[in-house]
Image (tube, rainbow, N blue to C red; front, top):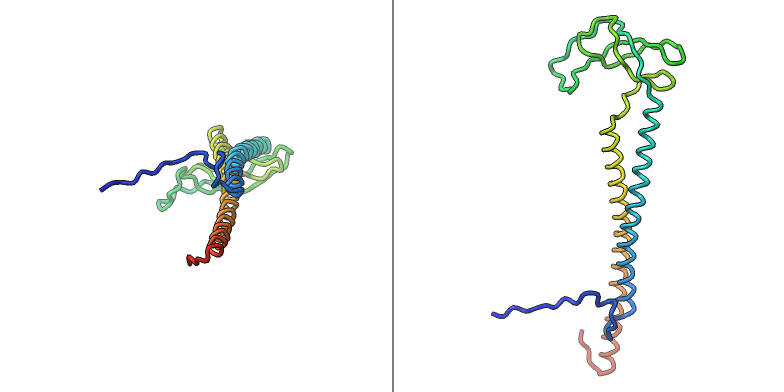
Length: 193
């Protein structure tokens, strides 16, 4: 049994061809512009998102201060049913904010720490407790992932819009073919469908 061979003609929409229609040329430009805008837009969006995440990390580090806190009462032992990775427990601590005001709040402390022990905590500028700022590795990961996701979504949105435009062009091409077949049939007196 003989297999059929198919020849792929690359760039056919850009070449002079009597079968090429205006809609084929428009489709070629839509594809080219879509890919160019997807790549450029993805890079620009990725860099902008990475910059925004980087600035947020810098702001978080500038707004957070490590201060010593004193444990008010003995911390309980670790719970056996807890699966937390750091095994810390909740305990009441007191500290003095950078502006000199005294604060007292519950914070995560090492288990079985005795009352009066000093525990470092992180505070905002206003003196309230906050989580520690992200490490350099976490900052790089957040920046890289934020930029990559934003770039991917921006590029995908452009390619999706280009695909929708191509679907519209395909419908127009089909309508043109139908009109031409109808015109040819009516000239010869034939009816194909």
